[in-house]
Length: 155
Image (cartoon, rainbow, N blue to C red; front, side, top):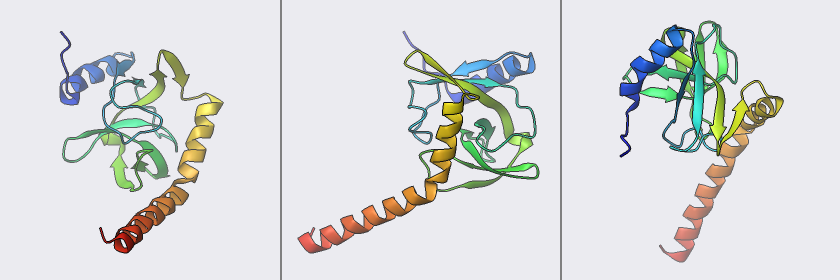
């Protein structure tokens, strides 16, 4: 029988593994990192962060409310980071080094490993972050189109 383990249960083990020089592998949940990471099926490998982190790094961090999040760095400002999930349009500001537990060094999908240092992954990051504003405008237009359609059709 499979047991579902919450992120809160896993964090002490992840921290212990990282502190001892190892790496930690887990399966993230949620849709905020689509299309790169799929909910409950892909795995990520974390390593201990070497600060300062860089743009496009993918850290696991703890929000002020205690929630654990895996989002991409889109901007570095001193010792603070601005983060955003690949499937998100809104940014999260002011993430500090103290909140960061680990950083993804590779991920696995359908048994295939992808390194975060691979040029194809780096290209994906640049394209995905670079097109965020275009995607935001696309979704605004789509919502507006739906609204107009409902008014015309009387729904």
